[in-house]
Structure formats: structure tokens, C-alpha cells
Length: 126
Image 1 (tube, rainbow, N blue to C red):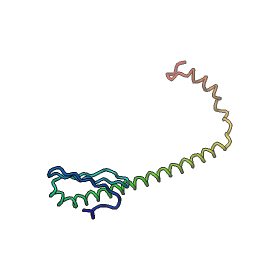
Image 2: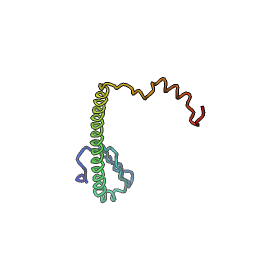
Image 3: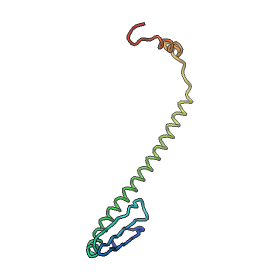
Image 4: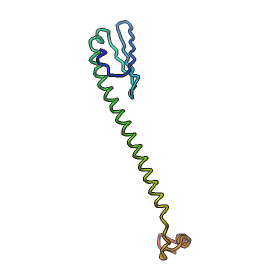
């Protein structure tokens, strides 16, 4: 049975009431900390627990790998975001340093545009 365990730290709790045995396996290290419970009669668990434990360990390893991949992806995304934000900040700073051009004579000043907007009728009336 113990050959089936993945590397790491595990807490094992066994409870027996009459003919029913409950085995709870609790991972204490790593990203996945969900305990696993096996319940059955003693003879059944003696026979099937190593096989069941092997399946659980394979699934646990898969979940650990997925969690680690997700952490790595999140870290890479955070670094990319920081790099993007730094580049955007540098671009904004460069734009701010560029002198502004004067307004074209064909564009009315803002105050004239605002006056015209107050009298504009979208239906064509005055």
C-alpha cells in the first residue's frame, strides 16, 4: 500500500467501527490539499486499497502538475503585464514630451464649437 504513495508528506487516519473501516489520506504539502476517504469493510479495504490508492495518487499527481502549470502561466502573465505596462508608460512619456501642434484654422475654437452645439437641431429645424 505505501509503495503507491507519491513523494511528499501525508497524514493517514484510520477509524474502525464494528466491521467498517474508514481510511482518510490527507496531503500536507504541495498545492492540492484535498483529503481522500476510503470506507469499506476490513477485508475489502485489505484487498482493494492499494489499487484505489494508486488511482488516487495518479490523479493527485496530475492535479499537482496542473496547479504548477497554472501558477507558472499566472506568473508569466503577470510579468508580461508588468512589461507591457512599463512599455506603455514609456510610450506615454514619449508622447507627452512631443510638442503639440497648433490648431488648424479651419477648426473653430472650442468656445465657438460649444455655442454651435447649443443651437444645433438634429431634425433640421432652427
